[in-house]
Length: 253
Length: 264
Image (cartoon, rainbow over all chains, first blue to last red; front, side):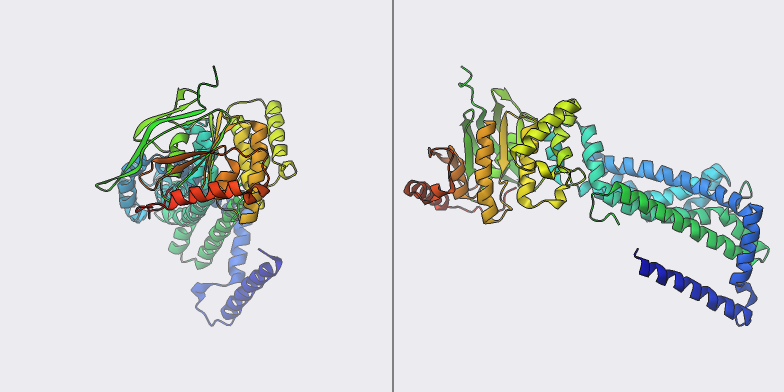
Protein backbone atom coordinates (compact mmCIF):
# COMPACT_ATOMS: atom_id res chain seq x y z
CA UNK A 1 0.00 0.00 0.00
CA UNK A 2 1.35 3.45 -0.72
CA UNK A 3 2.03 6.01 2.00
CA UNK A 4 -0.93 8.23 1.17
CA UNK A 5 -3.42 5.39 1.48
CA UNK A 6 -1.88 4.35 4.79
CA UNK A 7 -2.34 7.88 6.06
CA UNK A 8 -5.95 7.95 4.96
CA UNK A 9 -6.61 4.58 6.64
CA UNK A 10 -5.10 5.82 9.90
CA UNK A 11 -7.09 9.05 9.84
CA UNK A 12 -10.26 7.12 9.09
CA UNK A 13 -9.81 4.88 12.13
CA UNK A 14 -8.95 7.79 14.44
CA UNK A 15 -12.00 9.76 13.26
CA UNK A 16 -14.34 6.80 13.80
CA UNK A 17 -12.96 6.21 17.30
CA UNK A 18 -13.33 9.93 18.07
CA UNK A 19 -16.96 9.95 16.96
CA UNK A 20 -17.64 6.87 19.10
CA UNK A 21 -15.94 8.53 22.09
CA UNK A 22 -17.83 11.78 21.67
CA UNK A 23 -21.18 10.00 21.34
CA UNK A 24 -20.40 7.89 24.43
CA UNK A 25 -19.25 10.89 26.50
CA UNK A 26 -22.39 12.83 25.61
CA UNK A 27 -24.36 9.69 26.53
CA UNK A 28 -26.10 9.83 23.16
CA UNK A 29 -25.58 6.10 22.74
CA UNK A 30 -26.63 3.42 25.25
CA UNK A 31 -24.08 2.41 27.89
CA UNK A 32 -23.83 -1.14 26.53
CA UNK A 33 -22.05 0.29 23.49
CA UNK A 34 -19.25 1.27 25.87
CA UNK A 35 -16.57 3.74 24.67
CA UNK A 36 -13.06 3.66 23.23
CA UNK A 37 -11.68 4.95 26.52
CA UNK A 38 -13.23 2.17 28.61
CA UNK A 39 -12.34 -0.48 26.06
CA UNK A 40 -8.78 0.85 25.92
CA UNK A 41 -8.51 0.87 29.70
CA UNK A 42 -9.76 -2.72 29.99
CA UNK A 43 -7.46 -3.83 27.19
CA UNK A 44 -4.52 -2.24 28.93
CA UNK A 45 -5.43 -3.99 32.18
CA UNK A 46 -5.70 -7.34 30.41
CA UNK A 47 -2.41 -6.73 28.61
CA UNK A 48 -0.64 -5.90 31.89
CA UNK A 49 -2.03 -8.94 33.67
CA UNK A 50 -1.13 -11.09 30.68
CA UNK A 51 -4.65 -12.53 30.50
CA UNK A 52 -5.08 -11.32 26.95
CA UNK A 53 -1.98 -13.19 25.86
CA UNK A 54 -2.88 -16.48 27.51
CA UNK A 55 -6.32 -16.30 25.89
CA UNK A 56 -4.89 -15.30 22.54
CA UNK A 57 -2.29 -18.06 22.74
CA UNK A 58 -4.98 -20.63 23.36
CA UNK A 59 -6.99 -19.37 20.37
CA UNK A 60 -3.97 -19.10 18.13
CA UNK A 61 -2.86 -22.61 18.96
CA UNK A 62 -6.24 -23.93 17.75
CA UNK A 63 -6.46 -21.82 14.63
CA UNK A 64 -2.85 -22.20 13.55
CA UNK A 65 -2.93 -25.97 13.88
CA UNK A 66 -6.10 -25.96 11.81
CA UNK A 67 -4.55 -23.66 9.24
CA UNK A 68 -1.45 -25.82 9.04
CA UNK A 69 -3.64 -28.86 8.38
CA UNK A 70 -5.57 -26.90 5.76
CA UNK A 71 -2.36 -25.85 4.04
CA UNK A 72 -0.77 -29.28 3.94
CA UNK A 73 -3.87 -31.36 3.18
CA UNK A 74 -5.57 -28.76 0.97
CA UNK A 75 -2.52 -28.27 -1.23
CA UNK A 76 -1.43 -31.91 -1.42
CA UNK A 77 -4.95 -33.16 -1.97
CA UNK A 78 -5.74 -30.35 -4.41
CA UNK A 79 -2.66 -31.01 -6.51
CA UNK A 80 -3.20 -34.76 -6.61
CA UNK A 81 -6.91 -34.35 -7.47
CA UNK A 82 -6.11 -31.75 -10.10
CA UNK A 83 -3.28 -33.65 -11.73
CA UNK A 84 -4.60 -37.21 -11.70
CA UNK A 85 -7.98 -37.05 -13.40
CA UNK A 86 -9.45 -40.32 -12.00
CA UNK A 87 -8.68 -39.26 -8.42
CA UNK A 88 -10.18 -35.82 -9.03
CA UNK A 89 -13.30 -37.34 -10.58
CA UNK A 90 -13.66 -39.77 -7.69
CA UNK A 91 -13.61 -37.05 -5.03
CA UNK A 92 -15.61 -34.46 -6.97
CA UNK A 93 -19.09 -35.57 -5.77
CA UNK A 94 -17.93 -35.69 -2.13
CA UNK A 95 -16.48 -32.21 -2.40
CA UNK A 96 -19.57 -30.91 -4.20
CA UNK A 97 -21.83 -32.20 -1.44
CA UNK A 98 -19.69 -31.12 1.53
CA UNK A 99 -18.54 -27.74 0.28
CA UNK A 100 -21.85 -25.84 0.55
CA UNK A 101 -22.70 -27.31 3.97
CA UNK A 102 -22.17 -24.72 6.73
CA UNK A 103 -19.69 -26.72 8.79
CA UNK A 104 -21.06 -25.29 12.04
CA UNK A 105 -24.06 -27.53 11.35
CA UNK A 106 -21.74 -30.48 11.96
CA UNK A 107 -20.93 -29.19 15.42
CA UNK A 108 -23.45 -31.36 17.30
CA UNK A 109 -22.06 -34.47 15.61
CA UNK A 110 -18.49 -33.47 16.31
CA UNK A 111 -19.42 -32.79 19.94
CA UNK A 112 -20.92 -36.25 20.29
CA UNK A 113 -17.70 -37.75 18.97
CA UNK A 114 -15.10 -35.55 20.62
CA UNK A 115 -16.93 -33.60 23.34
CA UNK A 116 -16.22 -29.93 23.98
CA UNK A 117 -12.56 -30.33 23.20
CA UNK A 118 -9.82 -28.81 21.11
CA UNK A 119 -10.23 -31.74 18.72
CA UNK A 120 -13.81 -30.65 18.01
CA UNK A 121 -12.73 -27.05 17.52
CA UNK A 122 -9.74 -27.83 15.32
CA UNK A 123 -11.84 -30.17 13.19
CA UNK A 124 -14.57 -27.57 12.81
CA UNK A 125 -12.10 -24.88 11.76
CA UNK A 126 -10.32 -27.29 9.47
CA UNK A 127 -13.52 -28.47 7.73
CA UNK A 128 -14.55 -24.88 7.06
CA UNK A 129 -11.21 -23.58 5.85
CA UNK A 130 -10.20 -26.68 3.86
CA UNK A 131 -12.46 -26.22 0.85
CA UNK A 132 -11.35 -22.80 -0.42
CA UNK A 133 -7.72 -23.95 -0.32
CA UNK A 134 -8.49 -27.32 -1.92
CA UNK A 135 -10.68 -25.88 -4.67
CA UNK A 136 -8.28 -23.04 -5.50
CA UNK A 137 -5.35 -25.48 -5.65
CA UNK A 138 -7.23 -27.86 -7.91
CA UNK A 139 -8.27 -24.97 -10.16
CA UNK A 140 -4.69 -23.77 -10.16
CA UNK A 141 -3.47 -27.18 -11.31
CA UNK A 142 -6.06 -27.25 -14.09
CA UNK A 143 -4.83 -23.84 -15.17
CA UNK A 144 -1.21 -24.94 -15.53
CA UNK A 145 -0.25 -24.60 -19.18
CA UNK A 146 -0.03 -27.97 -20.89
CA UNK A 147 3.25 -26.98 -22.54
CA UNK A 148 4.92 -26.61 -19.12
CA UNK A 149 4.15 -30.22 -18.31
CA UNK A 150 5.10 -31.35 -21.81
CA UNK A 151 8.38 -29.47 -21.67
CA UNK A 152 9.20 -31.11 -18.34
CA UNK A 153 8.32 -34.56 -19.69
CA UNK A 154 10.43 -33.80 -22.71
CA UNK A 155 13.42 -33.13 -20.49
CA UNK A 156 12.92 -36.48 -18.79
CA UNK A 157 11.26 -35.38 -15.54
CA UNK A 158 9.40 -38.02 -13.50
CA UNK A 159 5.77 -37.58 -12.42
CA UNK A 160 6.91 -36.60 -8.92
CA UNK A 161 9.41 -34.08 -10.29
CA UNK A 162 6.70 -32.61 -12.52
CA UNK A 163 4.34 -32.24 -9.56
CA UNK A 164 6.93 -30.70 -7.30
CA UNK A 165 8.95 -28.58 -9.72
CA UNK A 166 6.37 -27.57 -12.32
CA UNK A 167 2.77 -28.02 -11.22
CA UNK A 168 3.27 -26.68 -7.68
CA UNK A 169 5.11 -23.47 -8.60
CA UNK A 170 2.84 -22.87 -11.60
CA UNK A 171 -0.29 -23.10 -9.44
CA UNK A 172 1.16 -21.14 -6.53
CA UNK A 173 -0.53 -17.81 -7.41
CA UNK A 174 -3.93 -19.53 -7.33
CA UNK A 175 -3.03 -21.49 -4.19
CA UNK A 176 -2.29 -18.25 -2.34
CA UNK A 177 -5.65 -16.82 -3.36
CA UNK A 178 -7.26 -19.87 -1.75
CA UNK A 179 -5.05 -19.72 1.33
CA UNK A 180 -6.04 -16.13 1.94
CA UNK A 181 -9.72 -17.02 2.01
CA UNK A 182 -8.94 -20.02 4.19
CA UNK A 183 -6.97 -17.92 6.66
CA UNK A 184 -9.86 -15.48 7.01
CA UNK A 185 -12.26 -18.37 7.63
CA UNK A 186 -9.86 -19.83 10.17
CA UNK A 187 -10.25 -16.71 12.30
CA UNK A 188 -14.00 -16.59 11.84
CA UNK A 189 -14.33 -20.20 12.92
CA UNK A 190 -11.84 -19.89 15.78
CA UNK A 191 -14.22 -17.35 17.21
CA UNK A 192 -17.34 -19.44 16.60
CA UNK A 193 -15.80 -22.69 17.80
CA UNK A 194 -14.97 -21.12 21.17
CA UNK A 195 -18.47 -19.82 21.71
CA UNK A 196 -19.54 -23.39 22.51
CA UNK A 197 -17.45 -23.17 25.66
CA UNK A 198 -13.87 -23.84 26.44
CA UNK A 199 -12.42 -26.92 28.07
CA UNK A 200 -9.45 -25.02 29.53
CA UNK A 201 -11.42 -21.79 30.15
CA UNK A 202 -9.25 -19.90 27.68
CA UNK A 203 -9.72 -18.37 24.24
CA UNK A 204 -10.65 -15.02 22.76
CA UNK A 205 -14.02 -16.33 21.60
CA UNK A 206 -14.63 -17.80 25.05
CA UNK A 207 -13.80 -14.40 26.56
CA UNK A 208 -16.72 -12.99 24.60
CA UNK A 209 -18.99 -15.69 25.92
CA UNK A 210 -17.91 -14.94 29.51
CA UNK A 211 -18.18 -11.17 29.01
CA UNK A 212 -21.65 -11.61 27.57
CA UNK A 213 -22.77 -13.64 30.56
CA UNK A 214 -21.35 -10.99 32.89
CA UNK A 215 -22.93 -8.17 30.89
CA UNK A 216 -19.46 -6.70 30.25
CA UNK A 217 -19.73 -5.31 26.73
CA UNK A 218 -16.43 -3.48 27.16
CA UNK A 219 -14.66 -6.84 27.51
CA UNK A 220 -16.47 -8.09 24.43
CA UNK A 221 -15.10 -5.18 22.46
CA UNK A 222 -11.60 -5.86 23.76
CA UNK A 223 -11.85 -9.42 22.54
CA UNK A 224 -13.36 -8.52 19.16
CA UNK A 225 -10.71 -5.87 18.65
CA UNK A 226 -7.93 -8.29 19.49
CA UNK A 227 -9.28 -10.95 17.12
CA UNK A 228 -9.45 -8.34 14.37
CA UNK A 229 -5.87 -7.36 15.12
CA UNK A 230 -4.64 -10.95 14.96
CA UNK A 231 -6.57 -11.60 11.75
CA UNK A 232 -5.06 -8.52 10.17
CA UNK A 233 -1.57 -9.44 11.35
CA UNK A 234 -1.69 -12.97 9.99
CA UNK A 235 -3.13 -11.80 6.69
CA UNK A 236 -0.14 -9.47 6.36
CA UNK A 237 2.24 -12.31 7.16
CA UNK A 238 0.62 -14.44 4.46
CA UNK A 239 0.91 -11.58 1.97
CA UNK A 240 4.58 -11.15 2.85
CA UNK A 241 5.24 -14.85 2.33
CA UNK A 242 3.41 -14.68 -0.99
CA UNK A 243 5.44 -11.70 -2.17
CA UNK A 244 8.55 -13.69 -1.24
CA UNK A 245 7.58 -16.89 -3.06
CA UNK A 246 5.91 -15.26 -6.04
CA UNK A 247 8.61 -12.69 -6.74
CA UNK A 248 8.49 -13.82 -10.37
CA UNK A 249 4.75 -13.39 -10.75
CA UNK A 250 2.86 -10.34 -11.90
CA UNK A 251 0.18 -10.75 -9.24
CA UNK A 252 2.49 -11.09 -6.26
CA UNK A 253 1.10 -7.99 -4.52
CA UNK B 1 26.58 -48.15 -41.84
CA UNK B 2 25.23 -45.64 -39.32
CA UNK B 3 23.97 -43.43 -42.13
CA UNK B 4 21.60 -46.22 -43.07
CA UNK B 5 19.41 -45.73 -40.00
CA UNK B 6 17.21 -42.64 -40.41
CA UNK B 7 17.14 -40.13 -37.55
CA UNK B 8 13.36 -40.38 -37.49
CA UNK B 9 11.38 -43.15 -39.07
CA UNK B 10 7.60 -43.07 -39.13
CA UNK B 11 5.83 -46.19 -40.23
CA UNK B 12 2.14 -46.16 -41.17
CA UNK B 13 1.25 -43.69 -38.44
CA UNK B 14 -2.46 -43.06 -38.00
CA UNK B 15 -4.56 -41.01 -35.60
CA UNK B 16 -8.27 -41.41 -34.97
CA UNK B 17 -10.11 -39.23 -32.47
CA UNK B 18 -13.34 -40.19 -30.84
CA UNK B 19 -15.62 -37.20 -30.58
CA UNK B 20 -18.79 -38.26 -28.84
CA UNK B 21 -19.93 -41.30 -30.78
CA UNK B 22 -18.20 -40.15 -33.92
CA UNK B 23 -14.78 -41.31 -35.06
CA UNK B 24 -12.72 -38.63 -36.74
CA UNK B 25 -9.64 -39.63 -38.71
CA UNK B 26 -7.05 -36.90 -38.26
CA UNK B 27 -4.13 -38.71 -39.84
CA UNK B 28 -4.84 -41.40 -42.40
CA UNK B 29 -1.54 -43.22 -42.69
CA UNK B 30 1.81 -41.55 -42.90
CA UNK B 31 5.18 -43.11 -43.49
CA UNK B 32 8.22 -40.89 -43.52
CA UNK B 33 11.98 -41.19 -43.13
CA UNK B 34 14.09 -38.28 -42.00
CA UNK B 35 17.77 -38.75 -42.75
CA UNK B 36 20.39 -37.87 -40.16
CA UNK B 37 21.38 -34.22 -40.08
CA UNK B 38 18.64 -32.98 -42.40
CA UNK B 39 16.26 -30.10 -41.91
CA UNK B 40 12.80 -31.27 -42.83
CA UNK B 41 9.70 -29.08 -42.84
CA UNK B 42 6.11 -30.20 -42.86
CA UNK B 43 3.60 -27.88 -44.44
CA UNK B 44 -0.10 -28.41 -44.92
CA UNK B 45 -3.41 -26.57 -44.85
CA UNK B 46 -4.38 -25.39 -41.37
CA UNK B 47 -6.15 -28.05 -39.36
CA UNK B 48 -4.64 -30.85 -41.45
CA UNK B 49 -3.11 -32.50 -38.41
CA UNK B 50 0.55 -31.61 -39.00
CA UNK B 51 0.89 -30.27 -35.50
CA UNK B 52 -0.86 -33.34 -34.08
CA UNK B 53 1.57 -35.43 -36.13
CA UNK B 54 4.56 -33.68 -34.53
CA UNK B 55 3.09 -34.04 -31.04
CA UNK B 56 2.70 -37.77 -31.68
CA UNK B 57 6.33 -38.04 -32.77
CA UNK B 58 7.24 -36.18 -29.59
CA UNK B 59 5.23 -38.72 -27.58
CA UNK B 60 2.90 -36.09 -26.09
CA UNK B 61 -0.25 -37.36 -27.82
CA UNK B 62 -0.93 -41.10 -28.18
CA UNK B 63 -1.14 -42.48 -31.71
CA UNK B 64 -3.83 -44.87 -32.93
CA UNK B 65 -1.64 -47.02 -35.14
CA UNK B 66 1.84 -47.28 -36.61
CA UNK B 67 5.34 -46.84 -35.26
CA UNK B 68 7.77 -44.04 -34.52
CA UNK B 69 11.48 -44.84 -34.36
CA UNK B 70 14.24 -42.51 -33.32
CA UNK B 71 17.61 -43.77 -34.60
CA UNK B 72 16.06 -47.19 -34.91
CA UNK B 73 14.57 -47.24 -31.40
CA UNK B 74 10.81 -47.36 -31.09
CA UNK B 75 9.27 -44.67 -28.87
CA UNK B 76 5.79 -43.82 -27.64
CA UNK B 77 6.44 -41.57 -24.62
CA UNK B 78 8.14 -38.18 -24.44
CA UNK B 79 11.87 -38.34 -23.85
CA UNK B 80 15.05 -36.30 -24.05
CA UNK B 81 16.05 -38.06 -27.28
CA UNK B 82 13.60 -35.70 -29.02
CA UNK B 83 13.84 -32.02 -28.16
CA UNK B 84 10.49 -30.33 -28.70
CA UNK B 85 10.03 -26.63 -29.22
CA UNK B 86 6.45 -25.41 -28.90
CA UNK B 87 4.72 -22.54 -30.60
CA UNK B 88 3.82 -21.01 -27.26
CA UNK B 89 6.70 -20.30 -24.89
CA UNK B 90 7.17 -23.22 -22.51
CA UNK B 91 9.79 -21.43 -20.42
CA UNK B 92 9.03 -21.60 -16.70
CA UNK B 93 8.10 -18.07 -15.59
CA UNK B 94 9.39 -18.71 -12.05
CA UNK B 95 12.94 -19.45 -13.21
CA UNK B 96 15.35 -16.99 -14.74
CA UNK B 97 16.82 -17.58 -18.19
CA UNK B 98 19.89 -19.41 -16.92
CA UNK B 99 17.93 -21.75 -14.64
CA UNK B 100 15.43 -22.44 -17.39
CA UNK B 101 18.17 -23.65 -19.71
CA UNK B 102 19.78 -25.61 -16.86
CA UNK B 103 16.48 -27.26 -15.84
CA UNK B 104 16.66 -30.36 -17.99
CA UNK B 105 20.29 -30.97 -17.08
CA UNK B 106 19.53 -30.63 -13.39
CA UNK B 107 16.67 -33.14 -13.71
CA UNK B 108 19.08 -35.55 -15.33
CA UNK B 109 21.38 -35.15 -12.33
CA UNK B 110 24.30 -33.52 -14.10
CA UNK B 111 26.84 -31.96 -11.74
CA UNK B 112 26.74 -28.20 -11.41
CA UNK B 113 30.08 -27.23 -12.93
CA UNK B 114 29.42 -29.23 -16.09
CA UNK B 115 25.86 -27.94 -16.25
CA UNK B 116 26.96 -24.32 -15.99
CA UNK B 117 29.44 -24.83 -18.80
CA UNK B 118 26.80 -26.23 -21.15
CA UNK B 119 24.27 -23.52 -20.29
CA UNK B 120 26.86 -20.85 -20.94
CA UNK B 121 27.74 -22.42 -24.28
CA UNK B 122 24.17 -22.48 -25.55
CA UNK B 123 23.16 -19.09 -24.19
CA UNK B 124 26.15 -17.66 -26.04
CA UNK B 125 25.20 -19.62 -29.15
CA UNK B 126 21.79 -17.91 -29.22
CA UNK B 127 23.40 -14.57 -28.29
CA UNK B 128 21.48 -14.12 -25.06
CA UNK B 129 24.16 -14.72 -22.43
CA UNK B 130 23.73 -11.13 -21.20
CA UNK B 131 20.11 -11.88 -20.31
CA UNK B 132 20.83 -14.94 -18.16
CA UNK B 133 19.59 -13.28 -14.95
CA UNK B 134 16.34 -12.03 -16.50
CA UNK B 135 12.94 -13.60 -16.11
CA UNK B 136 11.25 -14.90 -19.27
CA UNK B 137 8.47 -12.34 -18.75
CA UNK B 138 11.05 -9.59 -19.27
CA UNK B 139 11.98 -10.82 -22.74
CA UNK B 140 10.43 -10.32 -26.18
CA UNK B 141 8.72 -13.16 -28.04
CA UNK B 142 11.72 -13.71 -30.31
CA UNK B 143 14.13 -13.81 -27.38
CA UNK B 144 11.92 -16.29 -25.54
CA UNK B 145 11.99 -18.65 -28.49
CA UNK B 146 15.78 -18.38 -28.74
CA UNK B 147 16.01 -19.29 -25.05
CA UNK B 148 13.64 -22.20 -25.68
CA UNK B 149 15.93 -23.36 -28.45
CA UNK B 150 18.94 -23.10 -26.15
CA UNK B 151 17.09 -25.09 -23.48
CA UNK B 152 16.25 -27.84 -25.95
CA UNK B 153 19.75 -27.98 -27.41
CA UNK B 154 21.28 -28.04 -23.93
CA UNK B 155 19.97 -31.52 -23.14
CA UNK B 156 21.44 -32.72 -26.41
CA UNK B 157 18.54 -34.55 -28.07
CA UNK B 158 19.06 -36.79 -31.11
CA UNK B 159 16.50 -34.83 -33.09
CA UNK B 160 14.72 -31.48 -32.84
CA UNK B 161 10.97 -31.18 -33.21
CA UNK B 162 9.69 -27.67 -33.80
CA UNK B 163 6.01 -26.78 -33.84
CA UNK B 164 5.60 -23.41 -35.58
CA UNK B 165 8.11 -21.90 -33.18
CA UNK B 166 7.97 -18.52 -34.93
CA UNK B 167 4.21 -18.57 -35.51
CA UNK B 168 3.52 -15.90 -32.91
CA UNK B 169 6.23 -13.50 -34.08
CA UNK B 170 5.89 -10.52 -36.40
CA UNK B 171 7.11 -10.88 -39.98
CA UNK B 172 10.45 -9.10 -39.52
CA UNK B 173 11.42 -10.85 -36.30
CA UNK B 174 10.41 -14.06 -37.99
CA UNK B 175 12.86 -13.59 -40.86
CA UNK B 176 15.65 -12.76 -38.44
CA UNK B 177 14.84 -15.86 -36.43
CA UNK B 178 14.95 -18.01 -39.56
CA UNK B 179 18.46 -16.82 -40.35
CA UNK B 180 19.44 -17.35 -36.71
CA UNK B 181 17.95 -20.82 -36.67
CA UNK B 182 19.85 -21.78 -39.81
CA UNK B 183 23.11 -20.68 -38.22
CA UNK B 184 22.43 -22.48 -34.93
CA UNK B 185 21.22 -25.60 -36.73
CA UNK B 186 24.34 -25.70 -38.88
CA UNK B 187 26.52 -25.47 -35.77
CA UNK B 188 24.58 -28.09 -33.85
CA UNK B 189 24.24 -30.49 -36.76
CA UNK B 190 20.92 -31.94 -35.54
CA UNK B 191 18.15 -33.52 -37.56
CA UNK B 192 15.10 -31.27 -37.47
CA UNK B 193 11.42 -31.83 -38.06
CA UNK B 194 9.84 -28.42 -38.42
CA UNK B 195 6.11 -27.79 -38.71
CA UNK B 196 4.92 -24.54 -40.26
CA UNK B 197 2.08 -23.14 -42.32
CA UNK B 198 4.40 -20.55 -43.85
CA UNK B 199 5.61 -21.81 -47.25
CA UNK B 200 8.44 -19.25 -47.51
CA UNK B 201 9.75 -20.27 -44.11
CA UNK B 202 9.68 -23.95 -45.05
CA UNK B 203 11.46 -23.44 -48.38
CA UNK B 204 14.04 -21.07 -46.91
CA UNK B 205 15.01 -23.35 -44.02
CA UNK B 206 14.66 -26.87 -45.33
CA UNK B 207 16.56 -29.56 -47.13
CA UNK B 208 13.29 -31.38 -47.61
CA UNK B 209 9.71 -30.08 -47.54
CA UNK B 210 6.94 -32.59 -46.88
CA UNK B 211 3.51 -31.43 -48.04
CA UNK B 212 0.51 -32.82 -46.18
CA UNK B 213 -2.98 -32.95 -47.63
CA UNK B 214 -6.03 -31.62 -45.79
CA UNK B 215 -7.67 -33.75 -43.11
CA UNK B 216 -7.33 -36.69 -42.93
CA UNK B 217 -3.66 -36.08 -43.51
CA UNK B 218 -1.59 -38.06 -45.98
CA UNK B 219 1.74 -37.14 -47.57
CA UNK B 220 1.02 -35.39 -50.83
CA UNK B 221 4.51 -34.71 -52.02
CA UNK B 222 8.10 -34.62 -50.84
CA UNK B 223 10.22 -31.85 -52.30
CA UNK B 224 14.01 -31.62 -52.04
CA UNK B 225 15.50 -28.19 -51.83
CA UNK B 226 19.17 -27.71 -52.54
CA UNK B 227 20.04 -24.05 -52.27
CA UNK B 228 23.55 -23.61 -51.03
CA UNK B 229 24.06 -22.98 -47.33
CA UNK B 230 24.28 -20.74 -45.51
CA UNK B 231 21.33 -19.18 -47.28
CA UNK B 232 20.66 -15.48 -47.07
CA UNK B 233 17.24 -13.87 -47.22
CA UNK B 234 18.07 -12.86 -50.79
CA UNK B 235 17.35 -16.41 -51.86
CA UNK B 236 13.67 -15.42 -51.69
CA UNK B 237 14.20 -13.35 -54.83
CA UNK B 238 15.52 -16.15 -57.05
CA UNK B 239 13.32 -17.64 -59.73
CA UNK B 240 13.97 -21.14 -58.45
CA UNK B 241 12.75 -20.20 -54.97
CA UNK B 242 9.59 -18.69 -56.39
CA UNK B 243 8.95 -21.73 -58.58
CA UNK B 244 9.17 -24.10 -55.61
CA UNK B 245 7.11 -21.78 -53.52
CA UNK B 246 4.38 -21.53 -56.17
CA UNK B 247 4.37 -25.27 -56.65
CA UNK B 248 3.79 -25.86 -52.93
CA UNK B 249 1.14 -23.14 -52.90
CA UNK B 250 -0.70 -24.97 -55.69
CA UNK B 251 -0.47 -28.24 -53.78
CA UNK B 252 -1.96 -26.66 -50.69
CA UNK B 253 -4.81 -25.09 -52.59
CA UNK B 254 -5.86 -28.13 -54.63
CA UNK B 255 -9.10 -29.71 -53.42
CA UNK B 256 -8.71 -28.31 -49.93
CA UNK B 257 -11.57 -30.45 -48.69
CA UNK B 258 -13.51 -29.71 -45.56
CA UNK B 259 -10.63 -28.97 -43.21
CA UNK B 260 -12.34 -26.12 -41.43
CA UNK B 261 -11.46 -27.37 -37.97
CA UNK B 262 -8.47 -25.88 -36.27
CA UNK B 263 -5.64 -28.27 -35.45
CA UNK B 264 -3.72 -28.53 -32.20
